[in-house]
Length: 386
Ligand code: FE2
Image 1 (spheres, rainbow, N blue to C red):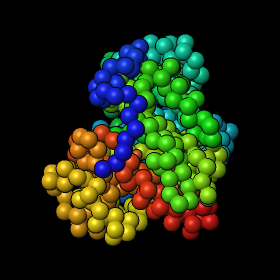
Image 2 (image 1 turned 120 degrees about the vertical axis):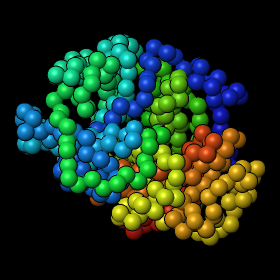
Image 3 (image 1 turned 135 degrees about the vertical axis):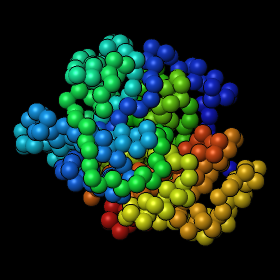
Image 4 (image 1 turned 30 degrees about the horizontal axis):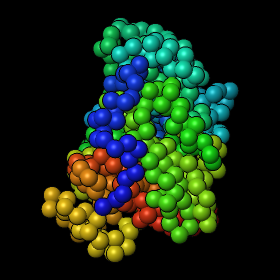
């Protein structure tokens, strides 16, 4: 069973109570990527990940400088945005970072208050509270910068009945690959630079009212070659979880350092999406061409009963099935979880996805970190970046 360093003695609910309620968050509203070619990216997420066409904005809808495709799968909404001209902040973002996450949007009851509470606590504004209207009502949005050039947008949609946001039209498509069972965003991880983790932990505590409920130091997270440190930040109701990683000194270059080098700064490292049936979901994703990190060696699967301890009895998934797909399994005090990580989904070794199925466990698979990082190091070796 993995060892989790809990910062305080009592249970999670109590810890969440320690969070402040000046910024109540209802959930993740959407994640917006800035990409080089949004039309093709949308096709990839539909085909490979089973997302459905939802909405579109661009020249045809009166937007002169960009095209945005909105995709949906259960509660997950992705927005893929590209610049139509070179003179554009979107184009500059793509030039510097490659394809990546620009906006992690949070669903709130009051976007203006969210912006005022956070900017008065030191957040740098990205967008002042702005009311957008169409025939379906109005949405209020406001945004602040977090690490790097990444943004948190607050979205207030209680007076809106349209498909997505004003300015978007419903996107009806004849091409509708079936979903693969992705349900909601479980957590989103940010990579920050050397020595910056505590700055951002403090930022999430002070500006957003989050609490740091789990920490992993470089003694927990290391391999023969590399190490990293990670702290998990959560809002008060536990719906929004943002682990933050910082590289740590190892014998070779860590994956966090590789990310920072290629993203050219801090940014979102991975998006973890939940499924109720990881075996079915991952089998589907593989059949559609999604590439995952290679499976750990046989010894990893032989050790599962020992790692799961008392939770082994509850485990429904046959070990040969999860081994065949390269799925990892870990347990904590409350249950177990199954998880697997894709390779980077763009040419730069930056953003990737995690597929996770929680069976009671609320941790992040610390018992898998070593196997996972060794698998990433095998990829780094091929890229010559280890
Ligand atoms: Fe994760």
